[in-house]
Length: 80
Image (cartoon, rainbow, N blue to C red; front, side, top):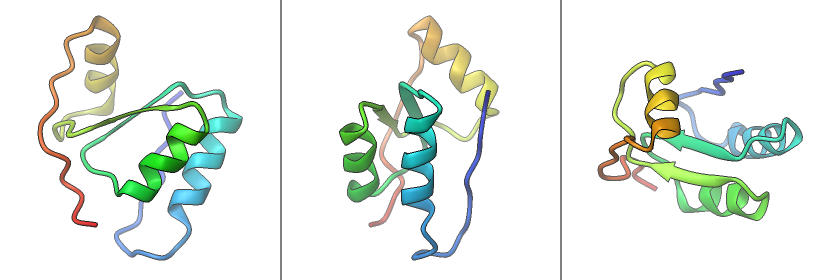
């Protein structure tokens, strides 16, 4: 299952919704191009591994690469 919670606007509650939903669904890893420190902390506190700096490719490719141990990451593109 792949779920996207997206919004370009800050302060809309995406972080709490995403972390609580991911934990409730039993997620073990989150892969993102960028993520702020607060969000990273909340995921880790919920037992979810955080991988940042993923390139902008189809999510299915990122998941396959992660599972194969070949996922390459770069800089965290989050600006906060």
